[in-house]
Image 1: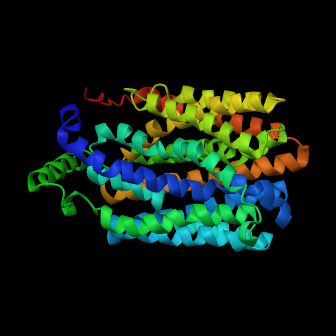
Image 2 (image 1 turned 180 degrees about the horizontal axis):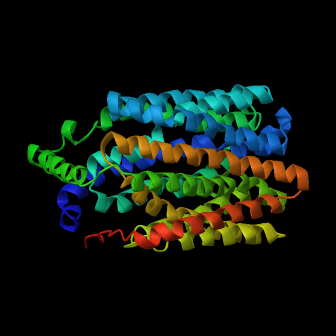
Length: 418
């Protein structure tokens, strides 16, 4: 597999697919998390409490998890090119529509609709990679794709902060401009996806017949080596629990970082740049993780993420809280490609698509639980520390659960060609 993974064929496929998919995921991620900056003024304008904000941030993931498995099945039937294009246009329209909500109930409803619209994208792309890449290459390819998460936050945070300076321009409030400007790219890129993507190697006009046959042979070899059994079912269940705990930490960080830093006295612009630094460290950690040759460090990355939340919970200043968030981002993001490479290798074919969507669906419940519990604990304790420590506990438990599995799974990842 190393020779196959290092071949010019798979480098060609990676360069053709990954950069464009990274851009798409950056837009998708920005549209789901830009409420963290909109909330700095929107919550006041609409009378949204911390508990309601946490619930609205998380309700996206409730509808998201309900429709992920059906969405991946639709992708298998309809084709990636058409399905991903449709999803992007729809969620871009919904995201832009958030600018015109006038009540808390309407805001929650739009977030629920956005979750439905985005539900097929992330698990669909992970499933999509199984059409193209041999298993030994997927950790590196997933790491490249998942760089969209820290890149989105690093670039999107200062952009969002500066868009918030457009208050009252053209009669619109700052948070309205935020949704309009950041939702439009999804619509435009949705139309572009129709022409840029191929459903799979078999329909890619930029591959020669010999290259298509090589990919088909590699996939056939992998498919033939996998059998569905009780052990694999247990692995998928364990992956669901681990990803639930990871998601509570990831989205607890993403949705609450701006509000926590501003509560320590940071300005909106300063908070934007703190976000850039935080997720810049996360991007470096993600790059480091892509070069690991086993899963053995995965439980320790969970514990690093937990330690960062503890530090942030103890902080009494914006710089110290941001330092804790930098540590959390490094642990959380470095573990992501390792986890998904392991999860995506459980099964093949349509079973893999359903399993990936199931794991991501359960993780979406964690993405609801993390932000929601943060808001509820803040309203109960009038401080953010309790929520941060609760998330640290979830990350610690995730590290303990993943320890046994990661110590057994030695996944060889080929090094980059010079």
